[in-house]
Length: 485
Ligand code: SF4
Ligand code: SF4
Image (cartoon, rainbow, N blue to C red; front, side):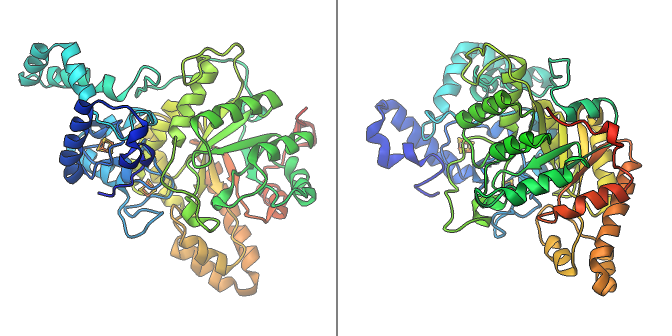
């Protein structure tokens, strides 16, 4: 076990800055000695092993504490020499019959506890419940009673009052649609959203040209938040520029670039500026981005925690710290979906958790394998969540054979061999073939009741969006194109 771990600011070299009693220090050392070799414990001080089939999730390099990221397979998408720890957790939970436990929205770290022991909290909780009651409850043959007793000890430890996470669906508490995107989705329209890459410099001429060229063809335009961990004009600034051009923005916030404080303030600021659609994501790892590499070890929050926090801020009027907000912010919350990663049934648990946490729409990663998309829809249907969030399926036209090969290597994308063959056979006509494939996928998606629309991602090829929307028969009549005020 490394000395320097996710909570290293509060670990041995810095201990003198924190007053900790000798008893607590001894307990922490004992816990580390036992849980270190057994679970690879990094002493996060906020233990959740009971929820994760006794596999420590703190090994995840993206710091997610609520399930796999969008690039997960059995192998970690950040470090291909390691297994995905969340795949292992889901797999073991399934074998133990505890998969449904994974739906509970778990809190971000209380950094004051990082590096300290968790056992003291457990002992205090046992005393609170009553030692005799606990012993009796755990010794009984009644399985439900045993589970209740267990939960009476561990639930208050892992779910502090300031978080109070659960496994339930919470319907939004407002009535009027927060945005044009939400209004159209509620109306049952098959919507199109599209991604426009934020500018690489303060010169926004090209960016604004792209926004204007797609504005009348789509309902809303997404602006990435430092995609591929490379710096660009921020998502909120891009969203604001789009609003000035009467295009409806979807502001993206990544867990990678935010803390619990900055995400609340950025979203409140966005709400004040009239930005109404917020998409919450984990974000690509800094390992894939600009070098020298940004820090990987301190991650404050994950995308599901962002959803939970923002939903409560809007619907319950509460900041994370419990203070009440005087005027409720307005926004329509979204999340990313990953039909092609890991096992669809595992991914469905993750999407279920996102919807429970607050996701009202889901924009998926790029889909080329429509058979697998079906499996994902079926898994969501089994969980009875299709009518709880609008599903917008990711479509990316392939510009060349080289691009097809590159996409085939991206974690979270499945590229069928048949598509590679078609691109090979197309030769000089590869671009046209790529557009044809995109149109076929759109047609397939349109025929599905489960899908509420498509999300076009063109990675710098924004000029193709009007053609695809028109050829797919999705262009709205001029009177339906309602400019955003
Ligand atoms: S969840 Fe935290 S306390 Fe529990 S084993 Fe992992 S690092 Fe240790
Ligand atoms: S694949 Fe994603 S969720 Fe799994 S360990 Fe790697 S970063 Fe974490």
